View 1 (cartoon, rainbow, N blue to C red):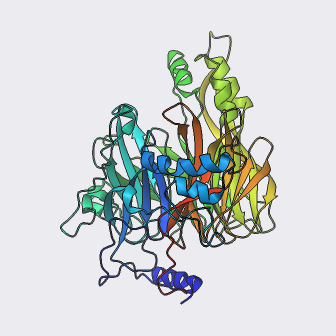
View 2 (cartoon, rainbow, N blue to C red; view 1 turned 135 degrees about the vertical axis):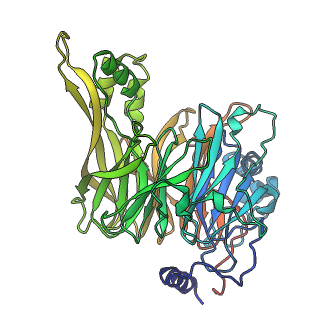
View 3 (cartoon, rainbow, N blue to C red; view 1 turned 180 degrees about the horizontal axis):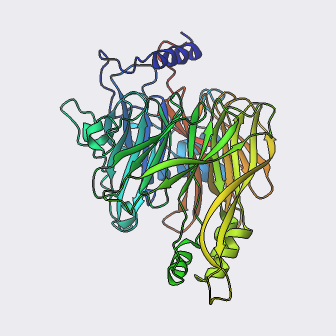
Length: 526
């Protein structure tokens, strides 16, 4: 069976409701298989990988926790030697690897680094995980990991360590706790949405959870359901078990990806000023929703219902924006939002409300949407709307709320199969950080790096088969040297590619410099 047929077969099983393989064996704790999600710990010490069991090889999927500091250290000699003008043979030998025997199929100068030495913990989940979301609570220094699992369906969550509290010489615990059962799978309490008796509304999670995002404080988590025209709300206070509270139905066909709309910094000072003037303040956190089967973008709002006893939070579709920049406009797979200009403006306001309001109104957020009809990157902006009203005795109107609106106005042509889009920083030759937008094209084995300021394609990264989940890792080494790496989860051949994003390394910038895990084709393929 060829790879495309193997994957088509798995999709047909999924669509028919065959979610598990009862006779399958448990997956190995040191194996990668059809990775669909990547996430990083608070301080970048741990890399989490969600394995989906897409060819029904096992009795479920898994989540792995890798030692990211060791991984970076092992990969670094390759970039260093190549940057010094050494041959690939010398560079690979410096990292203890041989030269890559098949660089066209699996790009990179060296043979793959084995996965097992980096795996520090693992947990078993249901089949068909569709992503990962890492959340941290600044107030309690607690962290959690969420994975939408289509085979349950559930959103499975893990208690993980907030490694930002560790000293430079402390070793992370690689905690990946989910109250495992006797068979080694995450327990029912950690599989949110399966039991309707655990929430006030008595609801269960709809089928096919696929996209996931959260408010900036991590208190509200939203996931989309691509076959149900629905999106679900999970509340998470980091102290008690997260619970499914609501699902919004009657959305457009094919909800696919959820993206958090970054809130402006004016909110808290404006809320305080409104209270001083005897006014309430209204701003509801927003999410943008894309669709596979509908040419539109929706805005969802989270309503906490905090005044009710007990509170019954919910989400609601408040705005719809048609996609008219493309010939077809449907089949949008992901959205990225760049708020650098507004954050730069807010950083010099020193908390002054007038300044923060001006930053919100005059610095729209840049929006980038991966769309397949035709293959392109749709470009737009989110504008903040500030609500003001006059209060007797005051010389200026009082800000009493806000919202956002979306405008789409341009496209960039891409190669076949745009599937995901994320933002992250590269390192410039001078050692500064600059934002980029990375668009994954699954079918054509490419990742496009787009400069959001010039709205141009800066470079094209060639990958192996089936690039899917991507993650940017930016920081400084122990000696203070900045680095930026792009991790590419290869769905088809089940490994992670590592791409150098330091422009000061002209010989390796935008190139895959290492593979983590032996590339393995789908079961039965040739």
